[in-house]
Amino acid sequence: MRTSVLVVGGGPVGLATAMELDHHGVASVVVEPRQQVSHLRPRAKTTSARTMELFRRWGLAGTVRERAPLHIGWSKDIVFCTTVTGREVTRLTGTLGLALDGSDLAAEPGQQVAQPIVEQAMRDALGRPGSHATLLLGQRAVAFDERDGTVLVTLEDADGATSTVEADYVVGADGPRSAVRTAMGAVYEGSSLPRPNISITFECAELGDLIPHGNAVQYWVLDPAAPGLVGRLDLDGTWWAIATYKPDEQEDDTEVDATALVHRLLGRELPIKVIATDPWRARTLIADRFRGGRLFIAGDAAHQNPPWGGHGYNTGIGDAINLGWKLAAVVNGWAPPELLDSYEAERRPVAQRFVAAAAENGRSGPAVLAAAAGLIGGKATDEAAAAVIREAKRTEFHSDGLVFGLGYSGYADVQTTNGSDYIPVAAAGNRLPHTWLPTGQSLFDRLGPELTLIGPAWHAAAFARHAERHGIPLAVLDDPSLGLDAFFSERLVLVRPDQHIAWIGGPVPDAEAGRILDRAIRGEWRQQP
Image (tube, rainbow, N blue to C red):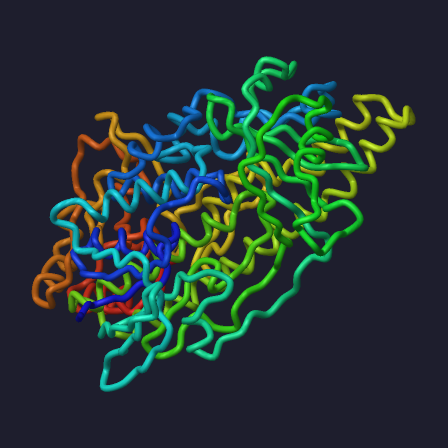
């Protein structure tokens, strides 16, 4: 078999890579050992507003929302309580980007949805007629041989039978034990947090009627002896729980009494059915490099984030889009191979920021538990404990600045990470500030699939001429009915396929327009004063 890109790993990041390649008309093969998507271990449950914006580009955002059991208006709250059926201490509202529906800040709000639902939606999309992707399920990649401008990849099925795929490029989205990362010779840098955790999926039909706090996407249990959190997977009695440590620091997970842990979190010994358990440790790890020749890594293969704040899976989706459009541009012949060098240069610093933010969110736990200990022990009032909790967890659940504000250049690297203080900044390297148009469309809906130049057509003519001569796909967006503000009427804004600004400036001569486009397709940044 021959393909442009072989994607190793069919989790959300691998599938997103194939989706992005398909979006640009590039063939890929996805190799994944699992024949079916398992719903036993839901893993990630927060799809950020930025990820939903990227899904919107593929026409997938609506499908994900339709399949999500918890619709966008169901709840936007995080509740902190003594137990799930006990006393509420405080709550945070408008969390996790769920309150951005209709906001000018984003084309899409966030969505609470279990990872397997997103995976299945992408599998279905890639399996439709006309897709450029091939899913090879029940197989794994076991060896890589880069030679003569291609990579020969040996695959092995469950019976040990082998076959070979030849690819121009290989993307490893194969998780923490990545075979691609090993083949590259890349290694993780960082550490694992010492405290073990265990995730539990369980059924309890009557729990919903017994919760006195109303609907919430997460219930944080403030019991220092058995802390954790609980949330709904659907409205039919399926729940998830995380016990943030195992009793007596046990290393043998088979001895953990999952039912007892859930009962402690609930505050009542309700009849439950444990469906699955999943022990894990929070890890702050980043690979020392994201590329080796024609091999690339993304998602957990490149970085492992602690789960606090829900950034790990979303960071991986960002990797997939960044790498996917660049591979497509090179394969389709309108960008030089040097563009691929910008993948690690752009995404590794972003991964570092998200890993650091998640680790900081995790470090807020002791402050929360200390407040809870005083509360439960009668040494603090509810309001005093609530104030500590709100301050400790504010940036974890109100992180719009982090989600939208990380840039790829030195012009405006970080717009802000202070939650509601987020102010979009139009600068080279940053995500294009979003706005809703008088037509009801998102500005993002009017961007072309590849490069887009926003601004008056007579100012854009020099760029259009160079693009046509050199086969660079460039859409010019000049529509007075869009009602764009004065910023866009006075400037030209060159936007990449991933909705990040490549260049901002005014009218330029033909030669300079050519240089600007050529720099953009090599992943370089420029901005006029």
